[in-house]
Length: 372
Image (cartoon, rainbow, N blue to C red; front, side):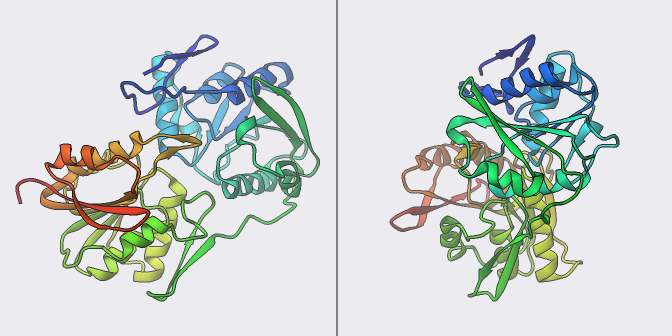
């Protein structure tokens, strides 16, 4: 795994994996920290969407710093890098979405997220509580900048200026308006006419406006007669786990995701469909780390990106988690794009990886844990 140096910080991604070639920071982080050193109007800083702690640790050298984000792995990476650099970070200074720091920051450093809906939610959130005039510096890599970014920021923050490029990154400047100029975006909805459902999802949640076609394929091949514990691993809005629960009323489903907004969306949808006393569980974290149960069934529609980077290590890690947490005879069902080479690693873990169904784009693998 590369140890990448940012000033006197040595930073690594998390989880730490041998052969990981992706860096823990980029030019957008460097640009924001450079501007903070040159232009800070006070000691207190709020950073948003930090990847691995570069901004949280870097801004912390100037004064009290809070880090706001939705990604459990990003939080864990920052904490690990703080420990490695003998600069332990205070977990009380981590803010899950829509939580505000106890003191108003003097400036905000915002890494532009991949999801436009998440960005809109964050801009509306900032406008609603920041004191008027608080400088907001937003930055992203040139190749990832969304079109019409300035008009989008102006909708929520007012006047926004695009700055010069530096290290293949670009910065955008605005001042907090001191009031909400536009409302917080409403949760998106996805209709499942065959079941008579309408599911909602918060900003940034995968598949929030359209049912992913891979998930749609797996929905037609979910197991029946599951009576024990089940898990929807990487649940998003919870569609797979909800269908599994509806088709198997004696099963108890645990909805798992790295995104707090995804877990909140799955919880909301479960309560809407099954009532507040539905009995299903929810886990925010890295895969199944920290979960003690053994499962009789796990369903998985794995990501093959981490942020903007193609990274099938996420899926392979989730395969290992499923193998570790399946009860003897328990079953994993995975849907994947046909071109992704997942059958071999699955067969290596489980001894077999049967093709349950396939079409021109996707394949569904069925794996059974030994001992059943």
